[in-house]
Image 1 (cartoon, rainbow, N blue to C red):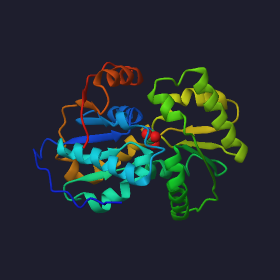
Image 2 (cartoon, helix red, strand yellow):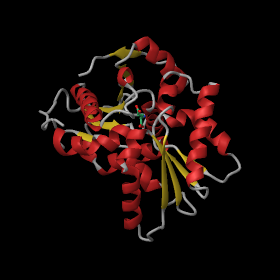
Image 3 (cartoon, rainbow, N blue to C red):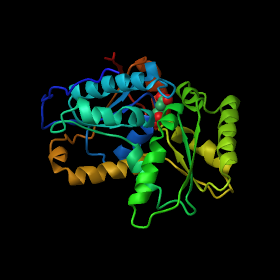
Length: 292
Ligand code: DGL
């Protein structure tokens, strides 16, 4: 794998910098909308690499390459901070980008896995955790490793039984706008059954892919009456970002505060606008961009 070296600083206008939010496609919108509810004052750039989604079945090298292209592009547009609102990219590329690609004095990149994991001990009653995610996230084992670390560090170490299950069909169905079809329902039920067959005592399921909140109602409906709580990441990531900005005044002070959001996609802008507007329940305008 070719690791890109630290990037030169971008100093377009250091007092009017934005927060970048990146996902392979539409999933990051579920994070963005919660962040904007929590922190409406800032300016955001959203980038969906819809033309190359899904990432979840791609190799480590390809996910790293695509993610770095996207993150770098957001820095070039004047972002001070980029949220990788994608578990697959957080699992496969975040650490390398943080360690090798950016100049941390002027650029910061945050992921979604660590804040999600930190919320789990307060939610589960019996420590039986299910993780639903893309094949890439599951194969990376990131959730298992992070959960074990969090648990060992917690003042009252908990006994966790963690069960992962990959859902390779869910992202393609959501990206295609087919999540309400009978075909999608079949795969959703099948994957939930397969997860619970591995551990019927699961009381908490992490929706470890930012696309999955778009089918959370269908998931919750199927699980109704079984005492299982599903965790979506939007509010958790939004709260964690607010805490981060409270601690990092150097970043907070250079962020512009006009409350705007601009959307970019590597796919057709018209297609993105129509799907994103459905997911966000508001009309948005999008612009097409080519990466790298
Ligand atoms: N939303 C991405 C995630 O959280 C989906 C990845 C994909 O494109 O497969 O993992």
